[in-house]
Length: 405
Ligand SMILES: [Zn+2]
Image 1 (cartoon, rainbow, N blue to C red):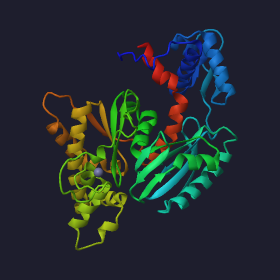
Image 2: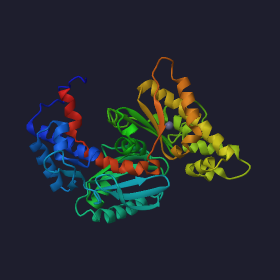
Image 3: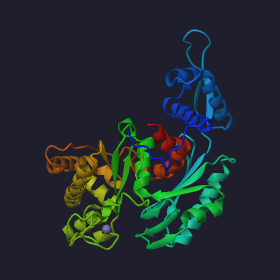
């Protein structure tokens, strides 16, 4: 039970209850559809007329559609409902250190069309190409685009809509939200890759993940970040910058500098760049390995190359140190390993689990550790989730239901 905060508590008025009921019905259609009005009324204990009025409104808005008749349980066959699929409703922009992907999806998160280009180190060029594709894909939404979700690999402030620092390209203090919003006319939401990937797991992950209340996603790409989901929402902290565990100090003299410049941070020991640096040292005589991307190194490890596997296992050991600390501090139900490293999960899963089990202090609960099931789509799904999560929740539900507890 949460303690009531009188500064933010509001008594329940009719409009608020109506909003909450609408979100409940919408989420029933999303998670249980195809489903009938009668079934929802039975399960939610809402009056049948209330459910019908909400469904009629959602059908009118083009969010929900009727798809024919279900089986009769005595009496008339009920009309089944599902989310309206196949119509562009959201645009996702996933800016990664290598590629930028722009995609449209329907309200169910099914990707409809995709455009991709090499991310240009010149922010203005990347921005204008992304905007061009957003406009192109958005035009096919015939005025039904809910918004544009943008994911960037660095320090992002979702509240101000600014990318504060993107280390790969040395981009600083960019007003990404405002720039894309004014160029396209759409509502824009931005976040960093790890938070967005965690949100994607919550909304599109396997049932094992999406039904979990508290979990932490450890996103290992060229860098390393964490997205913390507490009570089924992103934990952002007081200033919105929570989850920067990539900068937790876990040692000294790491193989590479962290994106913040330090050689002490978890990212400097356990990121893709750290893995590539280890690999480059192992094969120093044979190849100019420092030019490899992390994804290419993982491919070599999967193909059985001994040095690539050695480098990856050393990274896994360093990953496990940070993960042990997260488990001791948060006691989450689940830790998810996401990003390009997830592909190589079978190669290092045992190392990770063994070390974490050993290092989590005796008597304290451990957590299950699994690989993301979203694969390479994680951050793009995260971009879409930034918009969809707002559509399927509302501030009324997330902040004020608390006040009734
Ligand atoms: Zn750092």
